[in-house]
Image (cartoon, rainbow over all chains, first blue to last red; front, side, top):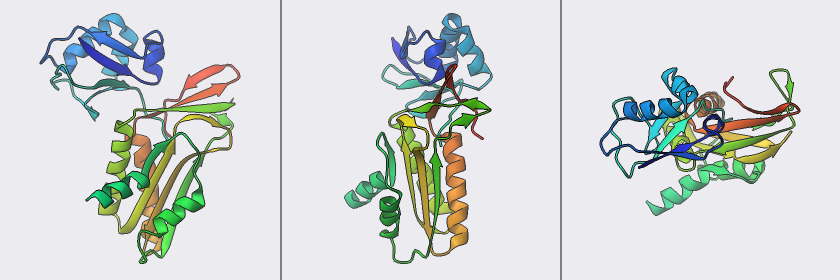
Length: 83
Length: 148
């Protein structure tokens, strides 16, 4: 199981959850994770495809081919609005 | 090495509580006697956004990653601009209209580089730092998407 942390609007889009638990196998890639997310939360999936929501792995912005391992810290990052 | 990391943790902070602009200026000033120009950007909470009334703001941040990105901004500013120090403090949690949100202070020998580094740092902060803004309006709460 992989835990995906949610921030900002992604929490509301996922029904006010703080995180998602996805049954992702060790070594699968970000694109597989996006597929899982898209099946359950198509609005989040669409925003990831539009690059409005970014995926981070271990606190770095990841790309589709980034591999995911069990202990990795994964998060969905909606558009930043600091400052 | 220990001294350097202690200093950096003071010079790049994400905190709930308000900050004193004077105290932070002194912190930058004390970093080098070569400093002859200090430029400041102070972001505060306004009561209108895109024509909507705003009653208050809540900032959320990604603990760890936000600090990491702010440290990167400080280090790149010191490397790419002719400045002696750059401090960044960003608040999180609930913020009342008129309160401080973010402070950037650049200290340089001369004003031009201090201004340039300060502007670059706030622009970059808005682009790469995982911080989110929830505006409380009379008609509900809105996550802000743009960074003007």
